[in-house]
Figure 1: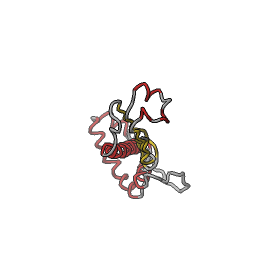
Figure 2: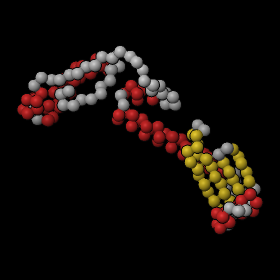
Figure 3: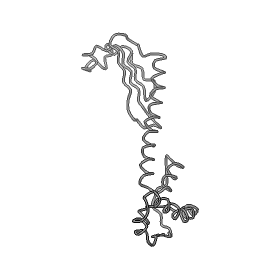
Figure 4: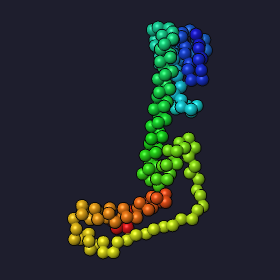
Amino acid sequence: NYVLHSDTDLMLAEADKDPRFAHCSHIASRQLKSVLCSGIRHQGELLGLIYLEHSQIAGVFAGKKQEWLRLLSTEVGLAIWSGRVSHYRDYMRKFAPSAVAKEIDANPETPDLAAKDCDVSILFADLVGYTRLSELMERRQLTELMNRAFSKFLDEVNRFDGILLEIGGDE
């Protein structure tokens, strides 16, 4: 009556007659005949459960239905994990340098995000006369001018794996 197929599946073919669950108020009150519980896992981590019960037919979840549930649990686990990774990557891309996102993409399971000591060069740029230009030009024209000016040095920054942290106006 009690079948444990793996560390993720539990099937009770005659739940209401299983003495181990004689004191389970849920099974008794619902008069359950069949119970099937499958763990939603990804790479050994338990993410949740899929729980099914039937009060009229004993063994209703046996055979192909159990195989389908196992497949569904695997797919749901992958979807949850992918969603978490995607959410994490989106978050990182918003608030961290592109080098961090590249490291996570290259090694999603064990990214090397430890702080490192290294020599750096810092570039501050400011366009002379920007305030006056912003008063004389339309916003679209000013944006195009800034994009052209910044593109002159951004290619070099990227060529040396540099990181652009912030652009604000002309700085």
